Length: 368
Length: 202
Image (tube, rainbow over all chains, first blue to last red; front, side, top):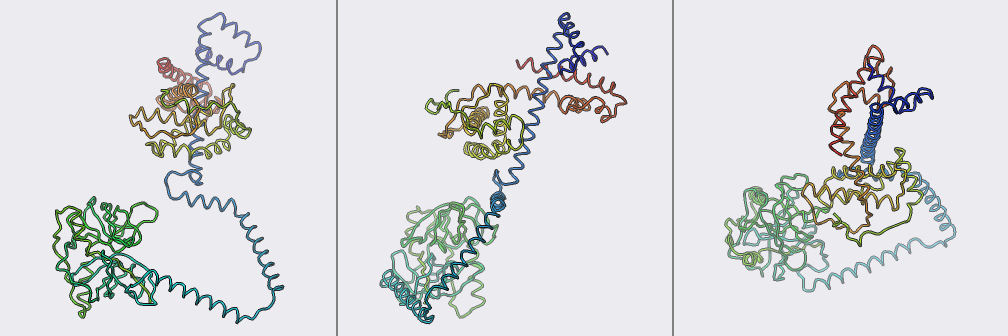
């Protein structure tokens, strides 16, 4: 019990809770008894440590609380997507009054100016103004026509038609059936160009918007039917990590690109497509995605805007499905015979490309 | 250790931090939540991007930054305190140093750490900070190994500064003397635990 009293006294002494008489007595006791003196020093040090501990613990808590608060408000970001929204909301909250005032001041000024303009401007014949603007439009159109004419000298695109979109496509039957993406064919007609730059007229056989696939048929006397296609269309799914390559027309010349299959599904887990890590550009749409064995595993269709090199390809089995559906629904169309055997398996890539090149076409869609 | 600080990077600045920053630091020293929030907001993103670019995760960034905030707090608390550079520079320097050290400890040292941002020497401050940190850890361990009701009782008396009477009624002791008795026993245990570690630390 004495110890308890002693400790209490030490604490009171250290906290400055003692009155003057007590204090002098205790200080004398300290001086006379080294044990007590040592206890005071030790306890003082300990209490100091406790204080620091307490302060640090509180600081740690408030730092953590601050972090959570800032995270919620979007002032700091830990990789979540919410924060940008938070930031916009925050900016809006911050500036909404200013914005509202600015907008209303702007509105008032605009009204005054337009009122003044109407009031002071000379009255003009309305129909004349319309006539003039129509003329301008005609001139503009003529200029555009000239532009396209210059661009497409000797093109098979009909006169007065304008090119609206372009993409790639490839043969699925030696008779001249070409598959491409539905979104490539935005216009009313299309021509195809091979890697040597020769143009052929083509007709649109079928468009399947759901699968984003379209089949064209070369309808041109200049087209020489190939003996066989060097690749096959893969029926089964392809595994992750499979090395792939593509040929397409992001520019007027054929361009080669390579990559790998990075996911079994496409954008937003779309099971019709694969995700492919490959550099793809506008114009690559509709191009074939081959594996090393020379099998077509997909058709390059879209890419993710925010991510580098992330592209999506329609799975090859959709070609088979589309051709089947077509066979059953429309008997007037010539039977499409898909290539079944790849003859370029095991070849060096350069040789493979020489064989494949002539089967990949530049698809140009136009509007009359 | 001087390896990370090629001489050309150290610019000695004798300019005093501007009044706004002084006010912030004063606020921090007084545990003002507004000041803490402002400093946090202004500096966290910079530190986070540094750590993310150098093999670290979001959690690492949070840890290191909060560590630096504590070091800044300690600095702001000391009486002889003068910050001779911007808060930003100081915090960055501390974080950089702490992170490089952590990377080394984990054996994931990366060569990428070559940001050419300005840094100030913070070795001494960090040594002090580490000592404080070690003490904190010892006390924390000692506290947590006490068990209940000792832990809560001592926290109530020494950290929350509650009175003996108040504690007695909260913990259900029949009177303040019994509570005092219990507190004494607990304190002796805590001191024993603390000093056994603390002396080794020295």
